[in-house]
Length: 453
Ligand SMILES: [Zn+2]
View 1 (cartoon, rainbow, N blue to C red):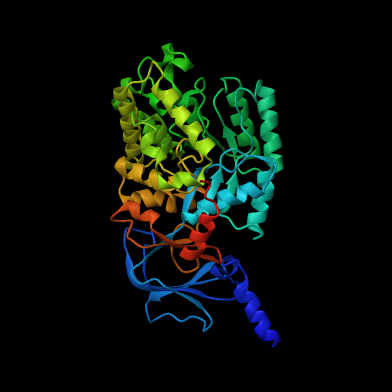
View 2 (view 1 turned 90 degrees about the horizontal axis):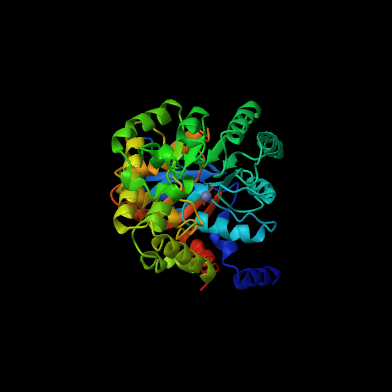
């Protein structure tokens, strides 16, 4: 009788979550008859069995040849594709004192197959979030975070810049986030102190610093291709910052593509990683009107006010006297060319879209980013590498980014083959983060709860 009551109680529990979210350190999770895209090279291993236990891939081989525990959770993955999970290397987590709303954002990332994020605007609370994710208290992608912003407002003197570097290193942030407004005095002090105490700096390149000094000082990642278009535009020395526009949007039509090799060679030689955030440019700074994006289904996960703000930003861009359809088109074109030339010449690219940022809904925007990277001329395989293999190298995590025995089990299961059609990255059938299997049913229910309108 007692056990009957217990069964009834479990059956009546309203949370499907607890049942759908399978987390068991001692139990095998097995993907059967699955096509594996291991990402070590461009290939598909057909009809595999992949066994996962306790956050690791413990076995992989031809279907029927691999053993697993009797009580294993078996996922019938016939006809589906298993890949390493992706990273969003230009993510944002709300920089606020309350952890609760951060969890919703983490869910959006996970639901989209993103198993690693790098938060690009840090807050003391993010250090707590990071340790709670690490110890399993909060379910989320692996989380790396910058500290609070270095910019023209927060850093008025070289001394203050150096002091902030030491403070953030001591606090335990993974990176320093640089924003616009740094100068020829403050930037070198930040860079020098960062080298001294051993913390990488990432993000924007201030106009007065310029990309050549940035490369020389060895940014860890340059994001948004910031400073790239300026560096290849003749006569840039004669222009004031406000004349050039956001990411050089007002002057990009004058960029000289023959100057690209010098830039990409310097980036490669100094081993600087580049996070294009091309989705930001293609959506905010392109000639397309706001309406081209506001009807995207993922907008329902944003507050209407946020979408309205994005529309306002777009309108303000398009109604600027410096804007023209033709010049905006050229901005997009030269950025695509820069991305392509980076790839072709051995500059390591990392996948990052910048979300939430204009028309970039966290998680969902990574699929747009991949689409735009393919549009820039990378193959789908090369594009997928920017979010997997390249990230493993950047983060120095050699047991990730590739599916093989012994590696971490951060995985995404797709219904279609992204090597032939990159839009298949949206076709998610489940996500594995460490020892947690998020089935499609789990993901759908979790997303349902996050709809705002
Ligand atoms: Zn950002």
